[in-house]
Length: 153
Length: 153
DNA sequence: GGTGAAAGAACTAGAGG
DNA sequence: CCTCTAGTTCTTTCACC
Image 1 (tube, rainbow over the protein chains, first blue to last red):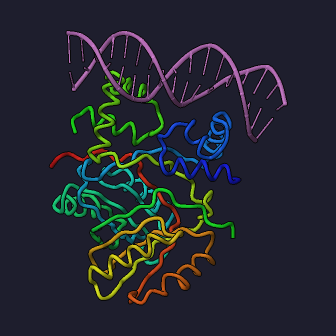
Image 2: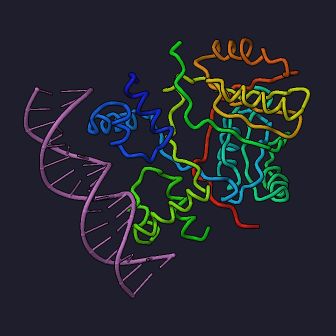
Image 3: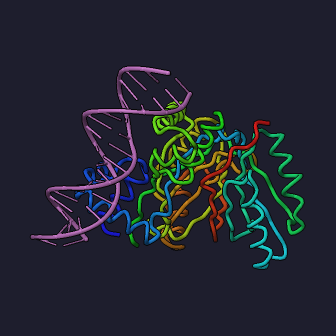
């Protein structure tokens, strides 16, 4: 991860669909160099993928919420099973495994409040390992799609 | 948003860097048709952007946390100012404005626990509008980069 | 590592169904 | 809305530095 790698990563974070040629020009190297760097970044797992960012309402997910969940017993088997279960649900867009008073935080999207409620009481609360959960509606979600690298230490 | 639009969106969610030609072939239309559909999806705001997904550790963000924050008074001025402040901090990767007992949930990444602690006590807690916050470390973060469209109702 | 050139592929606009 | 075509641009490889 030298300066050149960082510059390429930054460009791909900003716009993953710009041409290799454009990126090369912006970062000041030949297109072939840029292409090879990008290939290596991908191979090393620095770049994990390229994804279109879609407006949630276009996916009929106009209502979003964070659900904090506590499960028991807190064993690996229970954690892994619950994680796999939640990730598999279509309404779930992200799962955080947490330290602290909440064991999971689940990011959920639904068509409306009614569907969200149905999801919570019909799907989620079916799970026997859940000993408690708390749902908070998201009014606004600002995501930084191009977080800068922090200084090394 | 007909079936064709959805199919194109799905492909771009999965891999935003595949060629228009490949997407056209997969969804079963001519490349020019696919290109025009994609242009319109972008214009309509359905597609908000294309971003590389970068491994947090490569950005020196090996430690991640969710910080729940309560601010007072809960006026628009205070909310907007706090939101702008947090989004501007380099450690912050996402900000959720919430309904419920927490007013904000902030997704933070730092080099290590020490830097995270310094961020919380030196930066965040400087803000006078904060009346309380709670930090939870993220052990694992599974994001679904290709959420499927939910049924219309 | 990086570069430059060259073959092959993709993008994009425009005419036409 | 879709297809076909053609000019332009981009990707990708490879010999060389």
